[in-house]
Structure formats: C-alpha cells, structure tokens
Length: 199
Image (cartoon, helix red, strand yellow):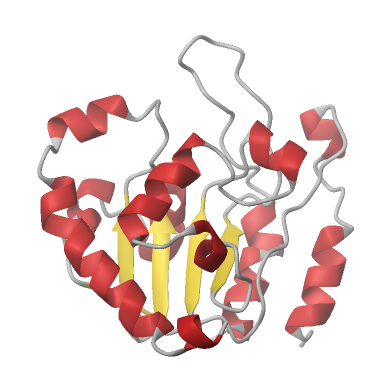
C-alpha cells in the first residue's frame, strides 16, 4: 500500500481527465496525515483551480461560517485535510445558473478510495450530494443532513453544498442553520481541541 505522501505525489501528477476536460487538469492536494478533520467536497471551482486553494470562493466563505473557523484554521493543512470526489475543476456547463459539470466518475475510484483508508481523522465533514453518495450510498442528502451520522466509526456531518446556486435547497429548509450548525461547530471545536491553539 502507498503511504499518504506517495499517493499525494502520484495524484498531483494525474492527467487522466485531460482529454475529458479539454484543458490541463490541476489536481488539488491539500492536507497532512495528522489533520483531525477530513472534509470531502465535490470538486474544485474555477476560482480554486486558478488560486490553488480549496474553497477559496463564495462557497468557502459560507462553509467557514458554518464551521466556525477562520481562514488560518481552515487552510492549516495540519488541522483540516481537504479532499473531494473529483480532484480537478471539471469545467463549466456554460449555462446560466448551471454551474460546473459533475466530478469526473473515474476520479474517486482511483484516488479517494485509496486516500480515505490512509487517514484517521476524528471528524468527517461531507459537502454536497456527490460526497454524501460516495460515503453513504443512495440515501437522500436531506435525510443525511439532519441525521446523527458516523463514518468509519467516527462522527460525520453531511452538509448541503454552500454554493450560491443552491438557493432552492436553503429556501426549502430554512431551519438548517439553526438545527445543524451549532452541533457542527461544537464537533469541529472538539476535534481540533488544543491543536488549534498550538498551530
């Protein structure tokens, strides 16, 4: 089995989707083995693709508010291991309000499936339906958001995607922040513990 460092090196060089995307992929690699929180998203946005920082966009601002973390904590690779179902920006649909294409289906089996067993975080946070489906099968996202969950024996949260395009979900579930965010923030602080102060 590869070490995490070896896997990350291989991942950073992956170009399997170059023909699929029509531009050179830039796989996002972010995090260290000791991170107590593993965050699994959907796929990088165009802004993330360009800046090389995960969730360095409008979605990320909302996500950090939900988590109760500042930028220094969120982007500290020893505190949060940030990965995704698709490791590269998949391109835009070009349709108004259409957002980006879904993650490449060949990505997670080749990378995320190998990556997850190499880490032992204290808390899993899954962002959006693609990450939820990968970890919990075909159970509906909304059900998962409001359930007490465990993944690989550790506490887990499934969150709706914080994208500005996800307006309908938030309109349909106005009590999300009141019902979920306080527990989420408490779990984040518990997982970080004294390490946040020492970082």
